[in-house]
Length: 415
Ligand SMILES: [Mg+2]
Image (cartoon, rainbow, N blue to C red; front, side, top):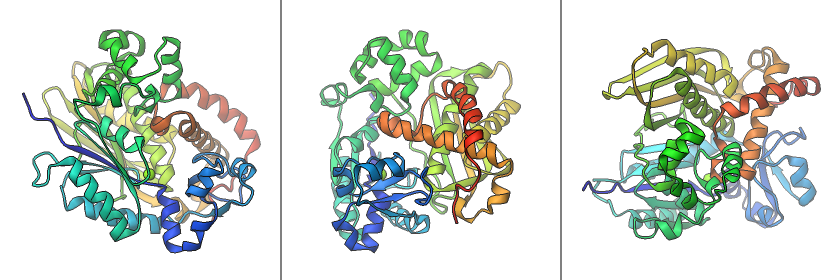
């Protein structure tokens, strides 16, 4: 039997708020939140400190809601350059243990320690937790497991400043009782569907088996099964050491080869959704989209294309990525792995509003909608929050764009 992989998922806790408290220690004594565009009532809470959390402030909720719960809440505008700086310092530390480091957003990374000199996952996790506090003054929560999905679950289970180890001997007790929506990729729509068939926990999801899940969810069902049962084998992609946060990407090894355009499209949308959600979190827009495919013979293929204008919209990146993939997809080809990457990033704050928001109202509305979805996922989706199966959301998109168009002028992005 092959030896299990040793995978860590490291999550910097309340990252933006923690960085602000390093800079302004007096913030530790008041409830505070980093929030996008505080002048605009539609801005949302991006991160909050412990005191704000105690007052009921939630990440992803609108500023006006947070203020209602916590009138004394101090709002801080995001300073992405500073966050990127600390994000790089943290990654530098991870690279001391392995060169297989896959960033997930600005404040999370997977590390694959398999075969590296220090491959005792729990020990490295403890060391990282301690060093992060001593050397950077920040806290992390770390999940350790044999697959990326469980490692991510682990980092979410106990925080801040904690390590959770999920092993073959404890996962039935530790993972299986968790709500199914804690799984990555399980968004609100999937959660509702799972509820309808009586599934609440990850264990119940795994128990349904691959064939049944496929009959309900299509090709995505097979991945759901693999995620729930700890069978995911998606590798930790060693990427971007020299250029952290110059790109945001996501790839998925599907648990059944994709061979129809429909399936490819579904997975591409799902990936684009999570990529653009992370772009929005990081305040970045992409000027280039890149796709990668690997077929059943393990041929790798990569292509990129410029986007007509910088964007952080799934509604623009997903069709571009799909086109790029389908242009190079040959009928009869079986695709095993797909990736979508947003490259050539530029901070939204540096973009000239005029050039960014060509067709302002429509793009603005689409952005607002996608942020609302991010927000819903944050609230209801656990860690699946930034992701989900996207075809379901398209109906929603069209519906809301019409409505939002009437209400919102431009002016969201601030100075
Ligand atoms: Mg975090």
